Amino acid sequence: MANRMTINYEKKPCYDIVFTDSFDLLLDELQAFDVENRRVALITDSNTARLFGSTVQAILKGHCKHVLLHTFPAGEANKTLDTVKDIYKTLIEARFDRKDLLIALGGGVVGDITGYAAATYLRGVDFIQIPTTMIAQSDSSIGGKTGVDFDGYKNMVGAFYMPKLVYMNISALKELDDRQFYAGFAEVMKSALIKDAMFYEWLLENMYEIHDRDSAILEEMIMRSCTVKKLVVEKDPKEQGDRALLNFGHTIGHAIEKAMNFEMVHGECIALGMVAAAYISWKHNWLSMDEYYEVRDMFVPFNLPISIDCIDPEEILRLTKSDKKMESGQIKFVLLKKVGKAVIDRTVTDEEILDAIREIYFSDEDAKE
Ligand code: GLY
Image 1 (cartoon, rainbow, N blue to C red):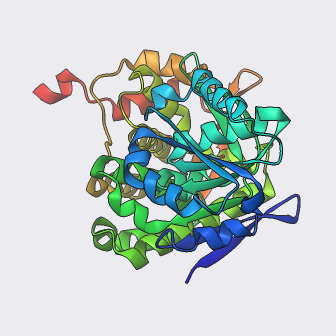
Image 2: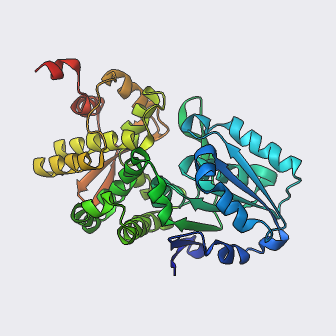
Image 3: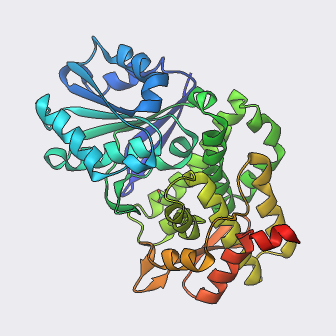
């Protein structure tokens, strides 16, 4: 049995998300896309290939006109145009044409890269997302953002390009190592904090079940997170306005990610960014002091950092200001009016940002006190 959710684009049904607990329904879902008459490129990274590559390849083989597996080395460092170029080469060598199909099997990097290759190869071929990590299932596989990092700048080159289907095998989350599992939880927390106070309460109440990776709880958690994402991307698919709310924690988070040379995982960096943004929200008298500390401390049981010692606050400010989330030289900062209601604020000053970075900065001096 599967649950489904339809994502609309420009008020028309665009693609479905299938929520299930295995790959058993994958073939049925793919048959709706006439795969017996199409070549399929299954694109994945080295980590996901090891876990699910042969299972998914075996499901496709014999049912599609032709199946090829393209694997690239895992990691944000490979989210580059060079990796996309290698995919183009594979597709050209296998004579893929515009009727053929790409399938992204993996986490956020695989989804973004495959989506970008699909958007640009022959000016656009269909693609399907099979997200296998918490970040990808709760956030990045939905909404059509595709792209790569460029010169160390996150997601600097890309396209909005919608998948034809998102197939989520929630049980894949049980295979994640703890670090990836908890890092993914940061995006789930983000969804709750920006739009859904009841979901935030639910996360607090179900903390132990989430730790235990209880199947029913994980499915409900991912579906609730996707409901927030659906609400936001349907209203503003191309980030002209409210979609920027999904960048809560990402302004300072991306700066930390870059300063740390991508050695910390994305979710850990945005957890720090969310703490900093919640701090500014408190200083704006929107969150109370108690709410700020509750939000901050909510990351701790999920093994996410709330402070960092190896950054230079001034450098983080500089990097924050060079992020692409600037508009006419002004930072679009996402703050919390209250838990469950985020707003975009263009008035946050450099001093306020620096203050917030210092709040999450745990220096050697602090350690001596
Ligand atoms: N992950 C943020 C967005 O999809 O807009």
